[in-house]
Image (cartoon, one colour):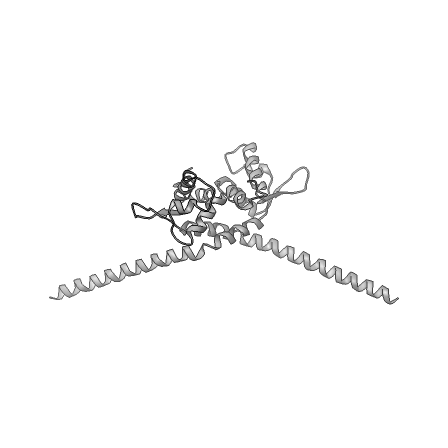
Length: 124
Length: 124
């Protein structure tokens, strides 16, 4: 399935790499050339170009129009679709963290009761 | 890099497949056996098991303790990390949609002005 048919899979696959996520973070601060993007990574320009192609196919970056320099810039719109997809699961993770919270509070109450009992014993 | 070292990449890679996302959507409605999970897809049980292993390694599902049935259930907590990561880009996509909104409003105003000029001409 290509991006045309399954854009969400292409976006997730593009994000499944720490270098590509770092490139997006850099572009979030402003457009940059391939040379500028390669600089902070221990990567050849062809390797960076390959990452850029994956990001471009996923619609997450685009090329500027200046013929010589051709800076890349962030296209954040597809990330909204990802945020919407993830959002459906919010009630599920919130429920998990609430359960953990209840468990920890119960544990604390138990300890407090235990300590109370110990104090009573000391008095005897 | 394995999940231990780069959990976010493992999660994104696990989500980069429509069948795996459909499995998560099914498990969001309640736990299910491999057979139940395979049913709606035109997939063999080994193919489904492979998808389940990817989801399990990413920490997105877990196996129940009943020895015979071993139902899978959703673990939504890692999706919160994804939502947080995506959230950093919210100002960027909101800015894009605002720009589009301004552009469309300007276009509408221009049309209205154009229509006004046409009406004036009709009066002459």
